[in-house]
Image (cartoon, rainbow, N blue to C red; front, side):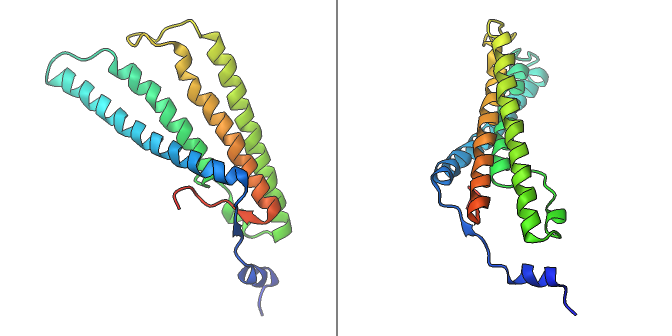
Length: 182
């Protein structure tokens, strides 16, 4: 005896790839974000290597390396997290969703993407407020404005909203967002 839910999932045709305007914009944006995050990670490794080399080999640790590495970590993680939202690399409850009937699953997915979009709005808004509050302060040893620490929070929030809207539109059209690395 076969389970009717399992049979319907087996016969279900794969969703079409999303071809809307937002998908055509977001895919290259996500790809660039992914490349920038990987490049930023390599730069962090280089900076930390230089700091260790300076401290233990040259016996003169550069003062700017730690602060710059910390700033770059913000860019790498927040932009990478936004790309993960678009390309489904974030933590989800897929194992629970696949057990639900299609109509319920799609509604829950819509709610999830709406909540993620609200989170993105909160990130962008609060990043803006926090950045504005420290706009005149300088980062020690770098001389750069403290506001640069909040730029990735704002950018990531905006990207998360855009990527969530793309997923919502794709779900409503019966389409699937194709990851940017494809």
